[in-house]
Length: 426
Ligand SMILES: [Zn+2]
Image 1: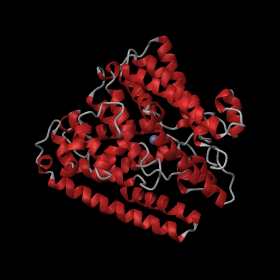
Image 2 (image 1 turned 180 degrees about the vertical axis):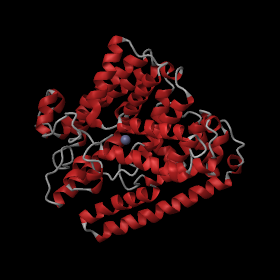
Image 3 (image 1 turned 180 degrees about the horizontal axis):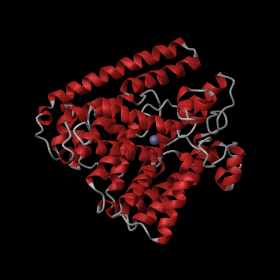
Image 4 (image 1 turned 45 degrees about the vertical axis):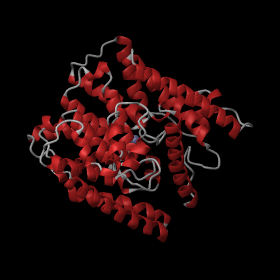
């Protein structure tokens, strides 16, 4: 299975440059691959020198901080000591950890949550697994890269610390939540599902045009779990259950299933029938928390939020440029000539983020974090609206249109059929 996984990864890496038929982009892939291998080696060497961890001496914070380079130890350690704060700057943290934000953050969180001890995890295997996950993200994607994964993981940690959830979560829930967040977009090719379908990419046929990317992220994660042997000491039925639950969590991030989850969540809140002592209800809330974490960019401080917005649009525009070059119809939100960053963000906030976080706030209240997130969301939306007015004063403002009109204008649907992905941002 790991050979198949490696083969699939190689195929997906190779196919995009084939579309471009560009020697320079192939050169870029090779350089990127070499750099990733080098980063993995350096990352492992750094870990190898962290003898305390290898000897299993570090059980609690700040022990996990020893994996950091000494030069940056102070600043990065200071950041990790406040890892549960909402204005955590993941971009700065990634620079301080020399591009190893995902591995470093996950090691720290596994340590402070006592998951290493609870599941008797082998630190070498854990580090090998996390290094594989981090390296399998494409660092040349402006948005869907390992920093996004680290950002989602940090948000997921904050959400799992919400009192209503934290009081009921088991160590297995914590393990699944953090793992799913870290791996939820692994090996993302930087284009969305409709693009893979219309270019007849092998992943689209492999997963029969349904949750194509999410299925690939999950199967890749399972491949790496088995290759690293991280769970090999656990009974087979336990490790199989973990793999299945990870799949259910990662597949929930498919935005085409947004309405399905939102309706169920709303019903639970209206009926006040969530019983978090039930494993199935806790699993549902982990799915919702991960979905929130995945689209929480507009709930961050403006400076962080703005950077993510520009990155995701840059990734959309790259797909649009590729479609233009291939004489294909340009996908919704991907045309840099007509889809401005403010317009894309206002639609994303209005129809995806705001409805979800309104329900999340109902679930968590009274919650200072939810209040802060909603405040940021409104402020950021207002700011994008002002920028949109400056950008395109002659057009109708997107937020003044009703949802259906806006969707029709973009020429795609929100139906839960898996064939159209409203926003590839998640
Ligand atoms: Zn994501």
